[in-house]
Structure formats: structure tokens, C-alpha cells
Length: 401
Image (cartoon, rainbow, N blue to C red; front, top):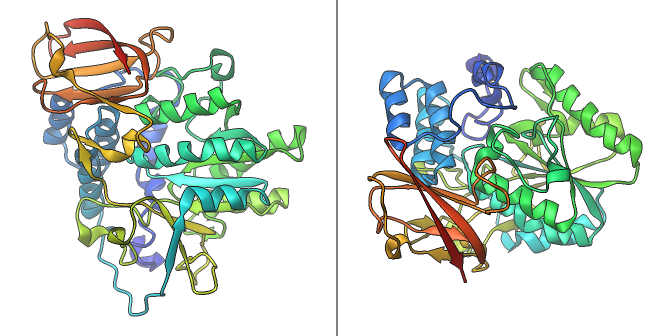
């Protein structure tokens, strides 16, 4: 099928990913999970040793992201792409000259004249959720009141409860996804899910219809939509026809501001990265601008987005990616000061005590010793739940200052 489509594999590797993972989505509800939400490194490696297919590697990348294994998540994802023969090196003979502008400032300023903003993520890449979170305050000040996502279960009571539970949706169980939602609810956004049943064109139309329900009640409502991979595309996508963004544009008559985070993000090896990805030129997430101050799209084909965000390459502090610190608003919490009464390796999860242990952890890591890595948390009081491979649990109350 890929050879028939004849599009650049690296450039559009994410366009057909939902089809490659269709069996997974059909067998995993966005509601409560039958299996434990969080798997350990040992459990993930066992799954891969039994069957290292592309599908299992995709699932492994998500499971690694849930427990703070950032490097393993992106390595697993790229391995899956390689097995599926999708990740090939791009060569470009013409590279546009560009300058950069801070992405948050650019998007927030532009949002004044927009009604709908759609931004995507790679499901194994928590960085993309942290970036979307960084937009929320500025967008709310500019009149945005609705925050929609395909990953949120339909029957969620999240707007009443004010925090996410682990069974509110599969991807929501990842800590940074949970934190993005917490931030939105705290600011005052109405959070809603717009997922639809079916697949391909049926799913894309269904998602657009679900978003239209908000517009039917509030025609002037300003909203931010957070989606996966190619749902952000405004034009036609192979097999699907128009993706969600294009369907919404056609049906509502509203031209959304569409933002891609995937093409200009780091991969596990430079050979998998876009030739336009130049992270050494930036210190923070940026929008690429041409000589006429227009955002650069790199698109002459039929499936563009309006903007592309280029993220810098991750640096590490206490074994964790630096973007988790959110420009030093969050803090590193060293575990070396704690006395551990469980065996290593163990999962360490931090919860707000008022939310309980069925909520999405604020942070979660697996460690083999107390010096391996640290937690990254906002200022406040937390309960740490430390669980070893035998299921023994230790609880510790901490304060981050």
C-alpha cells in the first residue's frame, strides 16, 4: 500500500500510523483498562522479547512514556518505523532560508484573530503535551474557553472532578498528559473529548461532528484541539480523504490554525530526522519564518498545516529531560534523601493527596537505585507511592519547595 501511495516516507510517516495501529485501538477501549495501566521496564521488555513486531514496539513506546523512560520511548517508536519500512532519510536539494521566532509568543499573538487552533502530538512524545500546556494561559487570556482532545473518554466527569483519572483515556494515563489537563481545568477551560467510533474517513467525519456540537451551542466559541499525528492535516490524507481538521473546516466554514509538532522534533538518531530540523539554532521551541515574515510550511503538496513548531534537542538534568522543568517553574526532587523499604527496581509515582491513587500521577519513574534519576514536580505537597516488582508498596509524604 505504501508503494502505491508514493509519498515521502519520512515526511509523512505519521499519516498512516493510525491504520498500522488499528487492531490496537479496536482491542483497547478509551475507557477503563483490563490490564494494569503502568507496566515496568521488565514487563515491557518481556512483551518485546516475545514479539518485537512494529505494533508491539509502538505499544512499548507508549508504555515507556508512561513511566518516564523518554529515551526508550523514542527508540522503540523509531524501531517500529524502521520495521514498517517507513523511516527513510529525506534528501532535499532546496532548503529555504529562515529565521526563528519564539513559538509560544507567536502562536498566542496569532490566536487573537483565530477561532479554532488544532495542534498535534506524537503519542509517545510527552514533550508535545508540555508544549501544548505552555500555550494554555495565553490562549485563555485571548478568549479561548474550550479544550478538546480525541484521547478523553466520552463519559468522563473530569470537568466536575477537576483532575484526570487513569481510566479517563488510554493516553491520558501518561503523567504529562494528565498535567496538561490539570492546568487547563485550573485555568478555567471546559475540557471535552471528541473521539468517534469507526476508522478512516468515518472516524474523521465523526470527530468533526463531535466538535461541531460545541459550536452548535456556542457559535463564537474559541477552542484549542489537541490531536494525534495526522488528524491536524487540513487537506487530503492517503486512504482517509480529508482528516479531522479538513473535515471541520469544510463542515463549519471556520478555517482553523493548524500546528504540527512532529516533523521538527528530535528522534532517537539523526538519520530519522527531517533535514529541516536544526535544533542547534534554537534554545527554545520556535516557529520558522521566511524573509517576508511568513511562517515556513515546507509543503507544496495537498496536506499542509499552517505552522510547524521546531523543538530543541533535549538536555538532561538529574536523568530527566530539561523541558519537564517548564522554564524552572517545576523543581527537581532528589530521592537520595528518602529511606526505601522496598526492593529495587521500583516504580515511584507522585500524587496529589486530595486526588488519590487512581488519578494520573503528576510524575512517575522507574529506578534501579536512588541516585539513578530524580522526580520533577511543581511546588506543593505530594504522596509518593513506591512499588517494587513483587507488588510491595511503600508510601511517603513529601513537600517540594
